[in-house]
Length: 294
Image 1: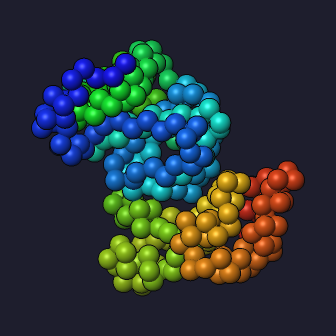
Image 2: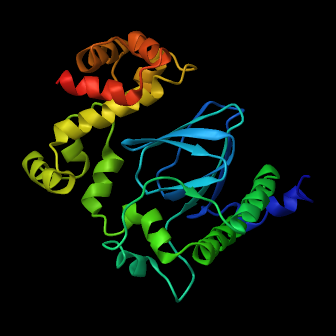
């Protein structure tokens, strides 16, 4: 069903308003991969099929009926199954609209809960909310006011159907996280130089080295290499992408530069790397191989 009298909706100022919270629907049948917007925090819901996710330095698989929180400033790539579908709830502020719980109160639980990065199962009326959102989005109901109300409704449901401990574990990545940590993740690009990363977060290289070791526990070079290798292993499994397209997406200057990087870090060319994965070698095994090539 289409909206009744679309010109009337389009003339409303809410349709012309830039929203700091809202909803996106991404259908894998029309595209095999999706790069999420990282300007805002997001909760990704798999509403059909399954979706493989590369979230910063982690690889995940999201199945129908599961959700995953993505902090602002995180690099996200999704590769869909044939029938895969995502709903992306994005927002600037985590707001439970409730006197009984707030983000500050969840921060107090941070030391008491173990961080569990596994996707969380969707519960209660959130199922109905997502189905309603799919209808709205399919009918091009792009009213900023409506989207904001539905994000608030989502947070009411989170408060209603999950314990504080579950919510603290779910939103753990932003509980007590330093600005430096989120700035580094936001500034990261594949195969970046340490000096480039330091410049992007407005620090001298020497200060960046010291702060980075304090926050991440390893050297910037080790971390950059690990994140770069994980991104390569994720994209190389998207067989719809050519090697040249992967090199471009990962910000390599040329396909030959990308090939040299793979040979140095994995001992394999990009095509050999893809073939090795097709033959059943896991990404984890290849990451271990890359450690020995340092």
